[in-house]
Structures are given as C-alpha cells and as structure tokens.
Amino acid sequence: MLSLAAVLAESALRRPDHPALVLGTERTTYHELWAGARRYAAVLREHGIGPGDRVALLLPNSRHFPLAYFGVLALGAVAVPVNALLRAEEIAHVLRDAEVAALVCAASLLDEGGRAAEAVGTPVLTVDQERDAGRPRLDALAAAAVPVAGAVPREPGDLAVVLYTSGTTGRPKGAMLTHLNLVMNTGTTMLSPFDFRPDDVLLGCLPLFHTFGQICGMVTCFRAGATLVLMPRFDGERALDLLVRERCTLVMGVPTMYLALLAAARTDPRRPPLDRAFCGGSALPVPVLEEFRETFGCPVYEGYGLTETSPVVAYNQRAWPLRPGTVGRPIWGVEVGIAAAAVEDRVELLPAGETGEIVVRGHNVMAGYLNRPAESAEAIVDGWFRSGDLGVLDTEGYLTVVDRKKDVVLRGGYNVYPREVEEVLTRHPAVAQVAVVGLPDAVHGQEVCAVVLPRPGIRPDRALAAEITAWGRERMAAYKYPRRVEFTEEFPLGAGGKVLKRELVARLTG
Image (cartoon, rainbow, N blue to C red; front, side, top):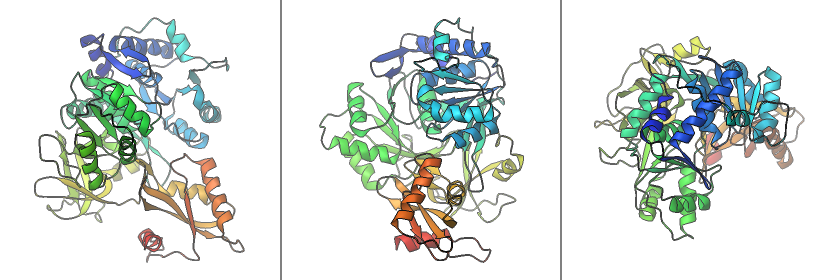
C-alpha cells in the first residue's frame, strides 16, 4: 500500500497544530487541512467519485487547491490539475482526453471552465461561488459534511495524478504519475536538494496547477511538515513583503520571479531570513545568480525536471560544490545519460563531454502518456525516458542543458509548444503558413514570435500583425499567444520540406 495522501495525513498526525498553510491573514493547521480535505472527499464520494476516477481541478492558488487535491487522493481517485490560464477549448480537450468524472472549478474560472464542461458533458462542482448558479458548491457542502475516515489504500503503481504536458506534434497529453513516482520524488527531494525541515517556511509563489509549484512546492513542503505561505498571484513587491513578514526561509521560482524580487529589493531595504532559493523552468544568468546572493545572502540552486519525471531529475545540491551554469547532479535513485539524439529506436549512450539527448531512468519516470501507447513507446525506450532536450554530462556527473530538441519555447517558466500555437494561427483567414519560434527576451527568457506567410493578396502591415496577435490572445492562454509577429515571403526549408526554425531565429536576432 502506498498513497500520496499520506503526505498530508502523516504530517497532520505528527504536527496537528503546526501551520500548514498561510494565505493572507488566514492560517490553517495540518489538522484543519487534513480534516478539510476529508470533508471534501466525503462530498465528492456523495457525487459518485470513487477509486480510480479522474477529477479535474481548475483552481487558482487558494486553500481550495490542497483541500480538493488531497480530498481526491483520499478517495483513491486521480487528480487532474488544469492550467488556470487555459481557454475553454483547451480545457475541454483535457476534460475529454482524461475522461474526467467531475470538474472542481473556482467561481472566478467558470466563464472558461463552465463552457468547457458543458461542451464535454462533465459535471461541475464549484468553490467560492457567492450566488446560486445551479451547481453543487463543494466548499459549502463540505462545511457540513462528516469527514471520510482516512485514505483509501492504493497500490504503488496506481495512478495518483495526471498532469498535462504537450509535444511539438500535437495537442497536450497527460503524463500518468503513480503514487510511487510522487511519493519517491517528494521524499527524495525533501532531503536533497530542497533540504526541507519542519521549521521551514516556503514562499509559494508558483502556481499550484504547475508541477514545480504543486510537487516541489506544496507536496514536498507538506511532506516535511513545514509551512507554505501561498500567493494568489505573483508580484515582486508583494513577494518581498511576504518573505519578510512571514520570515520565509526558502523560495522556489522561475527566472522572471527572481528578476522581480531583485527589482523590489532595490527600493525596499528589508531582507527576509532566506537560507536557500531554488530555480527551475529555464536558465538564470550567472550575473543574476550573483546579484541575488549579494542582495539576499543566500545561494540560488538551479535544477532540471520535466512533468514526465515527477518532476525533479537533477539539481545543484548542498552536498556538492555549486556549479552555476549547470543543473547539478541527478537526485538520489535517478540516473541521467546522454544518448545519440539521431538514434530513435534505441538508447545509445555517449561518453562524458559529448552533446546529445538527455535520457532519464529511475523511480521518477512516468507510467506513460494517458491513452497514447504509441507516443509512450517513443518516449520510454530501453527503460529510459527520452526528454527531447539536448545536454552534456561532465566527468563529475554535472548536467548542462544545451538546447531543446523539440523547439519548445520557454516563456516565463511556461512551456509553449510551437505546433499548438501554429494550429491556432493557421485558422486566421489571412495566414497561409506560420512558423512559431522563441526569441531571446530579457524579462521572460524567451518571447513567442510568429513568422507569417500571408495569403495571396493580403498586405502585411502593423494592423495585420496586431490582428493576428489578438486572434491568438482570444483563443490561447496568456503565456502562449505571440507578442511578436513578423512576415516573410518564403520560409527557409530543409531537404525534407520542413521549416528550418533555427535559421528563422538567426535571421530575426542577427
């Protein structure tokens, strides 16, 4: 028997009166949080949810997220967190693909979530709904419910969470993460690299629907019995104020957050008792790492992970010398190799110092992609997960991420998959062909740029560029649509007829 629900249940048993969650002036102890999750579970059970059922969670950073998340897990059901920035069409794809039994949706997200649920026929339970909208209110019903006794036993290989990622060849796909995957990843990373202790206070400024904020942040923090100070939405000045006021000892974030914290610190002389900071999503420039250490008096440890690897693969860790520019060494129980990128039917490992595709094996590798056996077989070869990222290992085992084989654009810590954006933009009546690339950006790491070949007779100008941007903004999450639109008369093509995106990038940045 092994259940991710034990993360919260055990901490509630050991530290019932310790604050688990801080949100504004509200403090929730471990006892209160676990009892609340079991009340949510009781209501979900009354609505037909049982072991193995999938429940989608469309929730912002609020106390409802952990209550619903661990309530679902307590029933032996599978949590399917949904990106709160998605539009109705994108949400509907997740609901349909995961065949969810119910959607738990915040009132603030009902415009998109409700439309998606209606399109798919998914029952909806709301939270924070002030007026009666004809839907069951999970939080209100839970307030009067008798909590379930405890967590339903699960096998280590049973699914705990399905997190949606995306590839360059199609729509988002669900990475199936087991109880073993997630219990091992949180238990391992709690010790190293995150070095969580019960008296730690973590600033939770990452979105909980994302694997970094959800697993590395919330779940690992609860595993340690530490305190999570949750931010509904990130803002540099507000984050610095919370760090100081709540006496946070560690922070996790993406590069844009560290830049914002440094900007806030230039006008606010107060400093929190930070002991360590962790960065993921994309590389943080070495000068920024140095400035953060000088400003806040603690190191920033950079690491590497993927949704499909539960998520942590490697990190700079206190046990070894910090190597800026690298993502450190693999975590305990995980092996990283560098494989010949052009060899697809097997994993052909390369020696240290050579660049190739990063491959991973260990307790963190997903069970596969939901309902996609062919894509699962392509991703997991000879027992190794093929990341699609290019990297190099040195002779001491430190990993450096060199490039992204799959052309993923990393904007502000979010993966933007060009093919998905291209499919939306090609529906615009003025677009004959489009290629989406990532261009260097000082604030977001990369910015999404659409290079458009207009239809015959269409005049490319600023007005059309603005129209294409608006088209994307209306149909995609805020981090996906292109802020920059360029026009071309022809694309550089390879021998097989594929657009050579690196040449486009070189043309636009040269």
